Image (cartoon, rainbow, N blue to C red; front, side, top):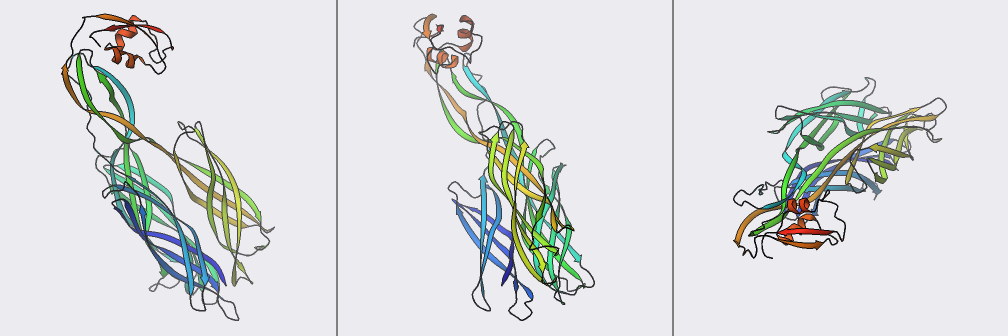
Length: 473
């Protein structure tokens, strides 16, 4: 009989190809089951499920930046016969690709005296650089001297308390790797050991400074958890972790969006580029405090609880985000006088609101949830005090398309039919002072002055305007 099926995803290789990405990794699986014997002893099976996944992304090119988030959605296990089981894991992959391109554009024109410019200010997030580093978190975790270890039955790994600081062209990273291990002893007792292993390192990144925005992601590439063959009553843990970082700076750019000359015919080329704007992160803690009554558990010992938060609805309002969802809980607890193991699934609904200045209903938000605290205590009345802290990190930003002018050529001298003339014009829907000035070869300054326009962004339809012209049209 199968009791508990769990796994940890490790991704050891990522590759960007033409029009696709390739991910190679493994799922470390742990299966707890009742042995087919008179004693119904609990045993475990640990195996690795290697995988290679190719995902089509039309615009992917070698050399681009790749971000991936992998989460284990489910593991199914079926017993085929007395010696074989079939294991199926479903992994959810969220991948993003981006590229950093140096773009040259014309900021000013000095060889023409009467050129008219339509400028617009843009705020963009310019990539300073990317970098990565491998760090190792390892430790020998001691267990009780009364426990003669037989096997590791289940493990759970989380990287929490993440922090990054910028100093002297480096990104200093610090975090904690929380480890939970369920193990079996020679006298068929099941115990839980928890430990925290520090994760520290740095990433070299030239030209980075404290005012820059820094995104840091952690990926477990390889994991070793085994009884220590050298030191008794201990378990050896080693994790190879890749830490990837991207650094951005906010830039204010004034770019020419249109131009013309009242006296000279101009030709110019214009192209659109995609940029990232208004990238910003916000993090807040949601505290879940609940009492649960689960008769199946009673006063039995809880070995572990698998906590899986799910966002069911994300609503964007002005300057805030509302989340509704649930926390799925899988209790693993003692039965049969503390020798056996059983499980029970429950859920807790949650609602959480995060303040986030600057966002609107049309903003794009990515949300990451990390579990920073989970504590389950069986009270004397056999209810369970549940304490869960969820760290919500909302990442805002949008991809925008802006136009740049990169070539300007003088075509020919326009024939001047009169040195100066005046046209009467009535404002039509969609008109702006700029469009009218360009159409008649005038200037925004002269039209505004002659017609005493106070707000050039508010032209009433049908308003009569006097338009000075400087060439024949």
